[in-house]
Length: 396
Image 1 (cartoon, rainbow, N blue to C red):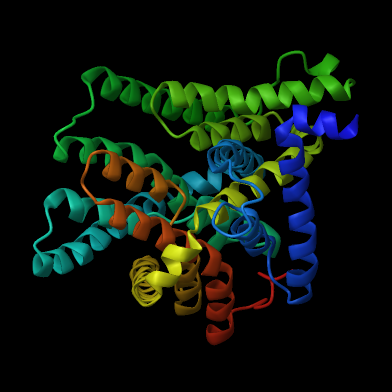
Image 2: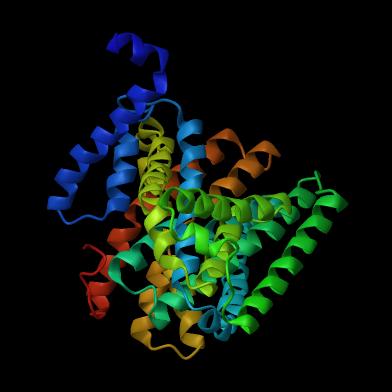
């Protein structure tokens, strides 16, 4: 009977496999004081299609994992100060634009030697310019630095990158000869204006009251569904307007924070957040093709080291230009040095539009995945070398 139930529900055994994999890998790596991010990614590598092949539905895990990024941004929205975030808009906006420009220029200089097309230069420049919201927010939360000035500055840049992903995709579509329609552009503009208006209203109002507040605060089960609906409802709206769904969740979190109801929202969705964030990083690990990695090990490792160093340097100089101390600037540069999860989207679009070859696409996936995997180690190393305060905080 039990075997028949498992066979009738093939996903059951796969999720049990993932859970056991996390426990076994986690017990070993936690003894080595590694973060949960590394545990999840390595678990994905091991159980994924390229090693043991115990879980081969990478697309399903990735889809579920994307919910983790949405929940993560929802929780961050509940915890940050909108007033402080707006006050640091110069670092967020100007810093992000400079980061993208310098990244594209660096790739352009290399592309001149190899005679790359403008589309390929922009693709690779955009790919390396985006940092990982999921990794960095998780590390800042674990280290307790999310509310500190450096955490707020880095978070502001990450959110600005999430907004810039839209014009990046539009530009790549145009240079590849497959432009975005006028309707899509109009929707994105309308969506951006609506978010700006809502943020302005929340900043001015300071405190709002949630509908049905008196009834919901007494019913835990209704709280779960209300919180779930609010989080993913905002995400669905921004998705409809062609904007980042994670950005919508962040706005929902700020909305909840303004209503002064973060405690029961946190209690209702925290367990779901842990599960889906884990699935997100597991899906990253499942993308790593160990055989391709081994066959191209020298090239991939060289690119990973060069990108980590280059991004660290670019972001350090940008932060320093905003009068941050050298310690803070170097640490912020390390936090933003990896390539982010939205770069997978850019790489996929470029591959679909034939801007890059299959080999180039596999190379992008491998490099992005490894920078995500090595990011916690790189950040901790940066802390130790610069003797940054609480240098062990990234490995709780």
